[in-house]
Image (cartoon, rainbow over all chains, first blue to last red; front, top):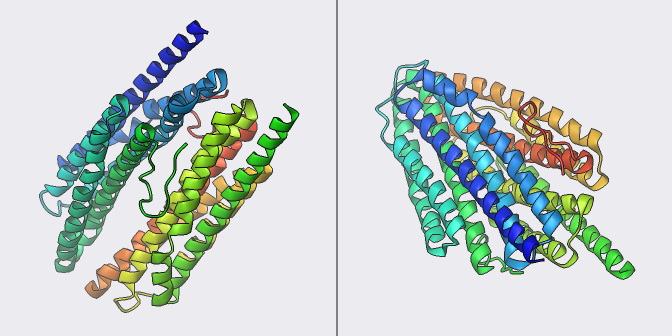
Length: 226
Length: 226
């Protein structure tokens, strides 16, 4: 029994490490996609578009690990919550990878046009989104509620930037119809970044639930616990 | 033991029924949000905006049921896969509810302007997305792979409509700057509907995995099974 328990904790450690690796990939792809857009680097755009496989492979591997841990060890309470959280975090990170592809697709179209304006707020959104991802995963590994809560707070900054970008680009579109199409792609990129922030928020909420068994997902509507 | 097993199957039945109820809510909210937009019904927009609570409550209740089933019954193989699938489907349906709110938010802004054009393709996208949701959940309940695969096929129709809507609205925006702002909201609505289709696709993929233990999520990159 002792050996089985240690084996389980080791496996849980590996699971966590693989999730961190996946988070690292996801964060890097967000960084590259925004950099490719802002620096008008078509080769980097293509690298992001072609580089989805490591995340997809990890997605399947991590799901598999979670299943096996649940099936072979039948964990209880905190361990069970950690594995179910891992299943969800895995899904969120895979979607972040997809969103990096979406950003690269928009960048590819954007590069066909003259630049609408120098990009400042979109790289800023990218930085915030990456930071949120990193903090949410660190919070998961360290079971750090305060750090998870800082992720929830950062999401407001991201939403404010998104609205500001929208209003600014709308003005450009009104003034010059040649800017409509590229500006549309910038608006889409800002939405993709907002959604990356939403995924980081989901992860942070899972961490808070995991640590406190407190459900903060729909504050005011109901509460939950195991 | 016999009693525990029957109790488990009963609980699994209740879980499935609650997921169906949540799917019904989600589908209805998508229907209402698109109808409110297309019929310019501001009162219905507000009802969608205010009506998120039943889905959020169900989201928490279903998550809770999954945890309890995992913790108390320690299911194996197919039952385990069904419960992990339920956790994921629950997340997808909750996001669909959020997207219905996003559509209603866009509709609220859209109603401040003169109509860009009579809406035909957006209601069509709404119908397809609702159908995909319904079929994906039916496929889950009946463990019907063929039906799940039909959901994956329908997603292509949705994507094609989204691209067509984008090109058409771009033309309107180019011709009349007064149409830029409302047309942008229609483009966003078409993206929200596309994402609802993506969630139905996720559910269908979970069903295929559940029934066949075959992972169709990243065809070509790797394969998985329990």
